[in-house]
Length: 491
Image 1 (cartoon, helix red, strand yellow):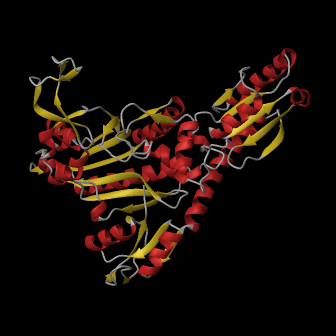
Image 2 (tube, rainbow, N blue to C red):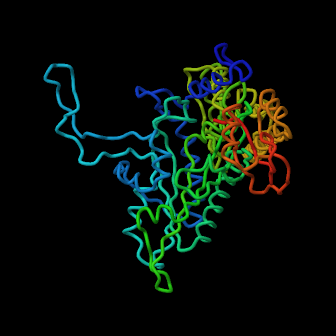
Image 3 (spheres, rainbow, N blue to C red):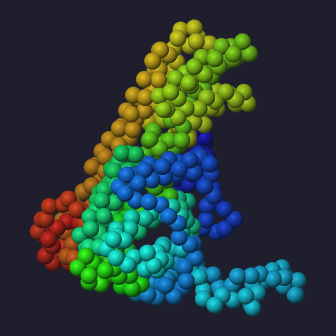
């Protein structure tokens, strides 16, 4: 580990930024608050995209694309929506530049003002529901199950790469249904899809729940979420699924003729995850030696590093290394053979360890003679000498073991850092000394939730869906409470 690389204990924020930059995931751009996603970071996002896209299509959804620009008037049609996003919107007012006659460069052409200003997409509900009005006339046109992969802009002043940037990549699903129950079923189904992806691909355990009114998506009737716990004890919202009711259908006058011949408003959902999942992946698993990736999302699952001293050794070692590479590829394992002669093996070991490659194979002249290879795993840094015969089976089994181990470790961390608080003093003590998830009673009022947030910076992350009701007294106000909810400080 390089001396200038921070540990989690020394400076968690710098540790995170060091990993993002030194592992080659992203870097700051010339535009304040925006990032350049580098090839290795984008490869992780592509793996996420591929897995999620299959899950969406397996549940009946199709991809489409809608414009980046949205007429400003669309936002005024749904009052809660415009209020929720107004402060984050970037707006296009002119469409042309011209040379400044005073010689000060280029300026906006005052004669090229748009008739209607355009908002750069912060989310697409408005333009999509304006479009759906053209698509929907009858119950026969329903349901519409559409997803789009896109970028959005939310003008954030305090940014952190992947976690919160002015522009980021995401997917957003937008569905239309004939009945309330169908829309609710869709909302829950997509929440389950996100939880499945987080746990089985990202190896991150998540809580499924509903948001409080204060934390609800602007324009939604209910917002459901998955919440994950990071290694610094802060929560991260990893995905949301919104039941929109008929709010947007009424705002954009989207009606359909039912089987009974009645004209009714459509029921809607929207749901999405973004590149902040890459940030979640970093913070949930990585250690003081760099990035740690779950095998299912690793762009390189296994790297082979040849060790040699001269050309004769190089040819023999490389021949065997290529045999191993081909055997691994035939098993569907993503493998890289790093045969560069510009870097020493030790440098390569450190590089791939820092990049979080799950398995490393090292092979030298003695290994070729003995029919062996050194196999190292990134999650525990353990190494062992194994036979080359059947190495593809051993690597495949190890990748599965690493995937499971990362999940078990993250689950154990969450369990150890989930505590109950029954008094206000206890709540504040746990929050300041430990962080993590706090299960506490809440009286159900927005006022109490706001007071808690103002005094501690903790918010209600979710009201768990699987939580049994348990009467008690609100940890803050002392008023009656029907259940515990989950509080945490969050990203």
